[in-house]
Image 1 (cartoon, rainbow, N blue to C red):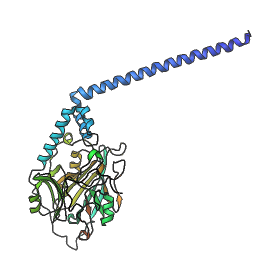
Image 2 (cartoon, helix red, strand yellow):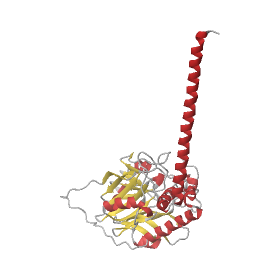
Image 3 (cartoon, helix red, strand yellow):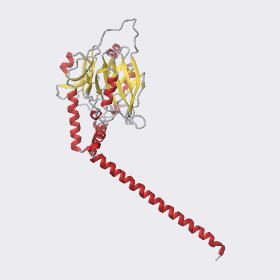
Length: 374
């Protein structure tokens, strides 16, 4: 044996022992981290599911899930029975919110020529805790018409409606049948009224429905009405949706806990001077905008002077278009959705060509999930 090799072997053994100690230390540290992480998960889970102080947070998470295509997941947060009760409670409350008689009036007098005329459409940014969005003011409510698709069997993107009809702006309107969240956007929910005519009626035998719309003078109409009442009110443009958020200048949602979760939102309101207020809130995009609850939307509308307001279809349908550009960031991974209705703003609404695409069709035989035409 070469004596000179002994120090080298000793050095190698020391290195190996050092490496073993480092590995043992690493795994001990890793085990502690994992154990701590598990303890935190169990503690958080215990607080989330058992602590009375977490009740509101649990319902917030559940309500947020209810507004998505993953509604079923809410049962793992609050239980299946509570989920059914929650949905039923909201439905009942929303119905009640549409009953109070609206007594608001608007000034329909035309401004004098010497007065400074405001631009027809004004858009501003709006933001709050967790959300970013836009407020669009339409200073002349009589310039708004309800846009609908132009092809049988398919909804249409709002940006397409705007460019096709020559509108200067547009916002998504009412809801639609959406089987398995793959609907083609062609089968509206409830009624569609355009240019004073009933274009679509799918009430299923019900006597009334909650609508959002305008009469012939530009006064906003929102709440629960029968078709006969809508006719007497001279409603010109309308879709079915709920809930009504403001009536006679009073907010109907008392607090954030009643705000139906966090989601992208679209809503419509009117000031006493007649100007229409559209609120469009982006959501489901961490780092940019998570979304807002209906209480947030209501407060934005009240801050902007709304005396009446109502919710419109939101979620992945939420979109604002102006000058042929999409202003907001729709949350759908596929971009804009195909929709049955949109509120469009025109410089010359009398020139808008909006034909009834549902004429002659049986609303109860429309395939809501048939593949869209390109």
